[in-house]
Length: 269
Ligand SMILES: [Mn+2]
Image (tube, rainbow, N blue to C red; front, side, top):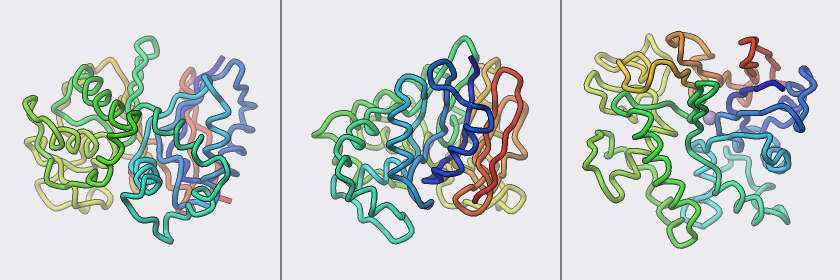
């Protein structure tokens, strides 16, 4: 049994299959972890969702900002754009089942034996694991409840970027969604910057990548994330691993086998 962790798939179904074939992935005994953003940008979002869902308990995933965007389009509170490349998916005969499965997926994965924490964008400096668990659960409860899905209309609020434990209501959900699915840079006080997006080294002072600030998360755990393709898997501290290497932009899909820390790469086809 092996544990495989793969970065943002973004509809790159062929590369996902090629990567799994490299290691003869077997859903009966192996585990597949996915950093989220299964859909959008790439050509085959529908095939990716159908396949990942079919893996059942062999897969552990988290939702990314593009997965939330899909849910928001589905419930009619956001508009699809040409860049999304999701019109085939949204017109599929099984779209209702796929959405109902997707929206009940977690925002956070924690494995206390393997000592792995995975989210789409990262864990903000101010959070302990327990904070991440509570805040993830709050989002998951909304996503899984039909009448609360409309909150997705306003998920992209750049204003809620400063954490205090007293945050509540929409401001708290916004902070959590920003931190878990969109974060890249923080100010030295840990405040999220939701504007700057380019690779480190170009960011205006005093912004720093979230993973460069001191963290409250238990340092025995390795943090796995995706989301930030321009990092290309580089520049993170030892126990923080970015797996998004921009397959949908012509880069590659990257997979880490946890047990021997070996990397497998599938260039974009
Ligand atoms: Mn992504």
